Length: 305
Image 1 (cartoon, rainbow, N blue to C red):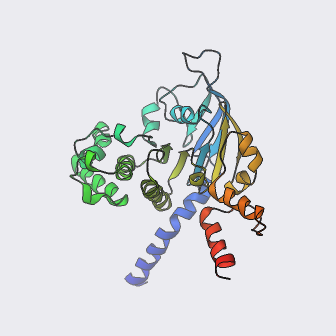
Image 2 (tube, one colour):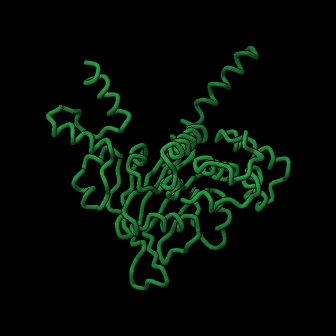
Image 3 (spheres, one colour):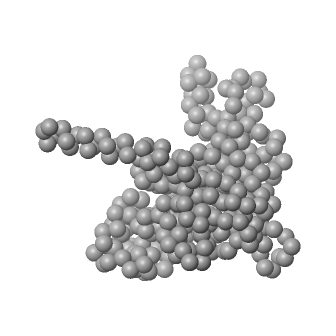
């Protein structure tokens, strides 16, 4: 077989690998919570998390939604070992989280928090992305390579020497994501990571995460109040008073408009627009449509007539 043919086969295998990996891992959860309970010490007798169980598979994007105080952020801190569950167990990539392996588990999980200004510890973008690797003893040459590669992936390599204070909110969150990606985690947790950003910054961060997820088969757990953002997830977990009360694909959850209101959640913009169009006598497709799909339908079915 010719060299050119071998190169072509290797190219095809590289393209196909993520799909084979995803297929193999769909039988085994990369993240599993089993009957987790947790009570904050200062609020005795009141569960912050109550008998929480769910499974997440490699390569999925899960959006966790619910009112303030529903336990979304608490569950994320339990997964990363920042809090210790009162009962139940958490499994990450097949390993049960415990005091002995907590640091090893944390290497598999990256977290990006709400306020980008609270995440910077370095004097420059380069220093900040390198910080996590310094803590785990990555050799300097390897660290420099990873810093540049991570910033390139989030399209921030041109800001290598820039001071964090001179970045926009969206740029800061992209640098925070680069710092996490440089550590090569299997799971990325976004804890309200876009809530303090303007629409442009939010779009930058979400597009960055989506691109990384597709390239690296990254598993994403997004904790968010933004239902329009959640509409792009593979599955939704709805939490209330520390419990998982519903789960399913966005189209399965968002068609339950009345129940969303009962759960104290707003309706996504596309659902509100859909209902208003129906109120005005315009026939719209049945089921849930994302903003993009609804706009496309309006353009092809209504505006171009």
